[in-house]
Amino acid sequence: MMPHLILEASSNIIETNDKVKVILQDCQNLLVERLPTKLTSCKSRLVLHDVFVLGDNNPANAFVHLSVRILKGRSANLINEVSKLLVEVLSQGFSKSSEQLHLGISVEITDLNDNYSSTTIK
Image (cartoon, rainbow, N blue to C red; front, side):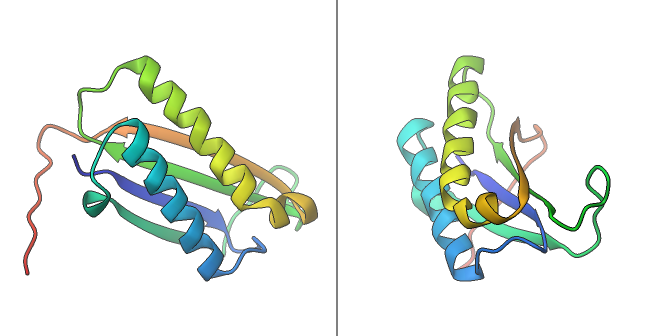
């Protein structure tokens, strides 16, 4: 079980990198509890976008999008439930941006392809 969490965000979000790390850890903990998976197998990262256009290009528009890639085998009901819970985690974590910007939050959970492979090198 190898969840990949890729958090994409507009570069105008208010939260610091340290705060984003806490949010990603909260997302990982939720996956450990709900999927389930092992915390040691989670791989999370942030990708900030300096160039973006949202709607009317108002500089107060912002976005946060979490892509979660997991191995196949979970039910659609479980994936939908986890997706909604992750939106809640992101909403709470990005509360400063929500208060000061027009923040859009989204989550997408997809299965990894059959040709996915990985290893751990010490």
